[in-house]
Length: 221
Ligand SMILES: [Zn+2]
Image: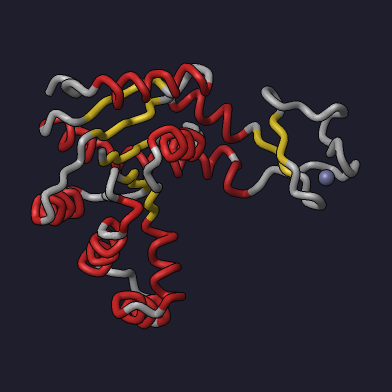
């Protein structure tokens, strides 16, 4: 069972990916991790990728797809895998489908965690972090005992640049630009399942289980 997971920043995608890994016993494949480990292990593709990155270039789709192919050929992917952060473009999705077809596999489920932008902005821009001990808080959902101060070490909490409202809005725009066409693409293939990422973690987990356990058709094109 091969899964692609989509979800904007703040949607809880990482938590749900971890859940799928544990519940279904399939590994999570992120292209960033794959690149780093290929470079470290000095595989042929890793050596190519390293020279490109050291020259300040972007690793091409061919190299990334080669890494995906290497990774999903490993024994732990026999039952399936969950792709995170890939594909990002229609060209990558096409190439991925062709690669999988060539080895008798396919993408079975594309699960998209959908959360309204307003809620995502609340979730992300309310985050506060302790610069001393790294502990995370939220001004609405996980308040510190004393406003603006770390519970553990009494240091004043800060908002990371990544969580400022302007940055958050930009990150969400980039996400939307990248994924709207991809979602339509997978919808046409009948494998897109959009679920609400607004409920509790366990609500979302049971929605994911009902998709994967029951199978069936995706969102209607
Ligand atoms: Zn602290």
